[in-house]
Amino acid sequence: MMLWTAQEAAAATGGKAVGDWTVNGVSIDTRTIGNGDLFVALTAARDGHEFVAQALDKGAGAALVSRVPDGVAPDAPLLIVDDVLAGLEALGRAGRARTEARVLAVTGSVGKTSTKEMLREMLGAQGRTHASVASYNNHWGVPLTLARMPRDTEFAVIEIGMNHPGEIGPLAKMARPHVGLVTIVAAVHLEAFANVAGIAAEKAAIFDGLEPDGVAVVNVDIETADVVQGHASALGVAQVAFGETSTDWRLDEVTLSGNVTVARATAQGAPLVFKVQSAGRHFAMNALGALAAVEALGADLALATAALGTWKPYTGRGARETIVLDPVETNRVIELIDDAYNANPTSLAAALDVLAAADVQHGVGRIGRGRRIAFVGDMKELGPQEAAMHADIAHYPAIEKITTVHCVGPLMRHLHEALPEDKRGLWYETSAEMAAEVRRLVDAGDAVLAKGSLSMGLSKVVDAIRKLGHPAQT
Image (cartoon, rainbow, N blue to C red; front, side, top):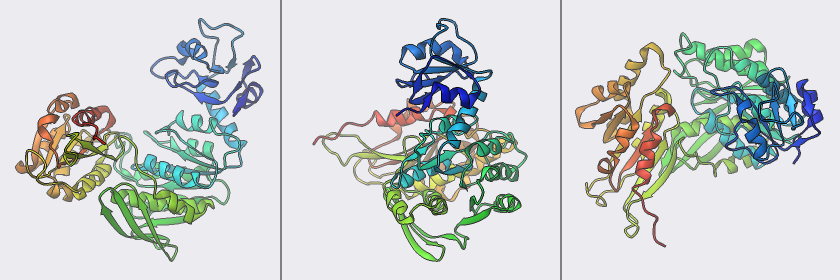
């Protein structure tokens, strides 16, 4: 499907189109570029202009540049602008302006990507739905998502994140959502903020971009709910609350059973039952907020609830998988919870709760008793209290039900020292060192969690556990 013509893109950006081209996608990465994409030569770790010739050779339909790059013919299909990022932003605003889609924006310290994926599933069952890819939620990810939006989109879900003050408001104004959803505000990126209230104020800026008659959907269980709701009130926008303490959308009961979460709620006075194909109380809370947002958007709640029941998290964000250790004795398995993409105190507490509730098997491994084992890596960007925040994990209630905690990274040394001796596993500086020990640390019947900030590379531990497995015979 044609996404942009040369004339449309030039008009949107104020740039100069070289050639009469059309593109059917927008890309910033030559490794994943598709045939007919517009390659955007952003400057990040390296100048994207260095890759324009490669992008065109791989089938790009055109390139968005600020100059004709070396090795590229002057008559190559280009869109030349003064500044590439500004050009992408302009293309994103034009992509948003030309669609009649109902737009929902989501932010939060924890759970925004999972919630965005839930929303994609729920709205995708009701119409042509466009949503952010992966965690494309920053100063280039939001305009890229908007620039990629097909003009016939009916529903759009835009994830908006931040690392520093002042980032969310401009992105929200670019996205112009009809509904803004704030999931959780927690101690994340404290290096850039004085306190959690500052983070809450930044998250609340998502409402700055709301369309007329827009709706703010807020988790009222968070300690800084007054900050978020206060900002919405100051803007004069309608509000919908969700949480265990809410009178709008109230979470009444959550049951974790194997890999399924079943929740009972009260939705504006009416009973509501929904499920998610992954265990976790936090998934139930995020799903409740997502359902409230879907209804505020004007979509069908019953269809959304049914579609939600098919959603499950993907690799690195709480996905669960069964590792079969013996191709013949297929009951010899490890239950793996891969949550290695990110970590902060709130999300780690939720992940440990999931592990604490996980089923184990006895009598199937060399140890004889199934265990709950956690591999945890450093949590980054927590500011001056980072050492204490890591040590405090030893006092999380879920730790009582976990057999052993193995720690990775200099900050997790503080947790390692604070853990009760009977739960204290190994400590290593790096994930690679820990991965080398995995074979002797886990056994059939165990439930195993891996979680840490992305830079800690806990995926190495996950991969080492996966390599213990064999395909089951059929």
